[in-house]
Every structure is written in structure tokens, then in C-alpha cells.
Image (cartoon, rainbow, N blue to C red; front, side, top):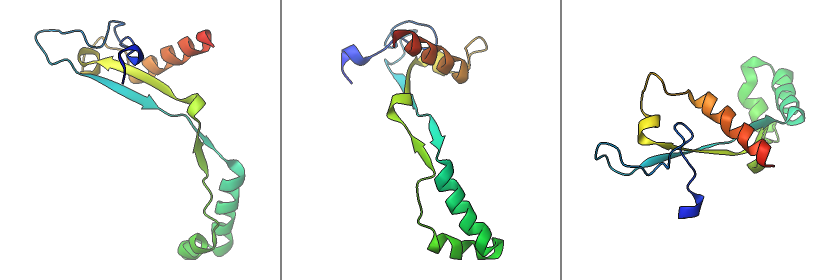
Amino acid sequence: MRAREIKPCAGCGRHPLHVEDGRRITFFVLTVDRAVLDERAARSTLGLAMHFGSDAAGLADVFSPDPEIVKTHPQLRTVLHLCEGCAGVQPDAPSLFELLEREVAAEEVEA
């Protein structure tokens, strides 16, 4: 990762490489991909399983074309940087979902 790719901490907003209490300079990079269900592929796979019945799930698996029923999209990827302090357990720290919501909202404003 290059210096220009380091983003502020999603929790506190400071540079994630700030040093606190003499701790090592480490931080977390969390990559979250949003997954989308391909309904057509899922129906095909589940329909075959229903056709063969629950006792023959293995047989349905053999005859299934084995399509990817869940796909991730790079354009829906969110990357969070968290400093050591915010990644730890702190009572006032926002939850991971709150941080994701903030990051997605900020990305939408930039777009």
C-alpha cells in the first residue's frame, strides 16, 4: 500500500498511523464486498434439488451445472482503515456497521 492510499481512520478520523502510548504503528484495513444473489442461478440449483428430493441432495449436486449463485461486485466494495485504538473494544467506539454506513455515504457524495 502506498502512502497516498492510506485513508483516515473510519472511527476517529485521525491518520491511522498515529502513535498512542508508545504502541506499535499498526492499523487494520477492512475490505467489505457487497454480495448479490443471482436469482435465476439460485432457482435453477434449488429446483434441481427439489426435483430429486431431500434424500438425494448429493445426486442433485452432481447434475447441477454448479453456477455461482452469489456474486460480488468490485464497484460495491468498501474499504475501511481503522487505527489500533478504534479497532479495540471501547465503549464509545462506533460499531462496524455504523462505520460502513458512514463510508458508503461519503463515497456516494464523492461520486
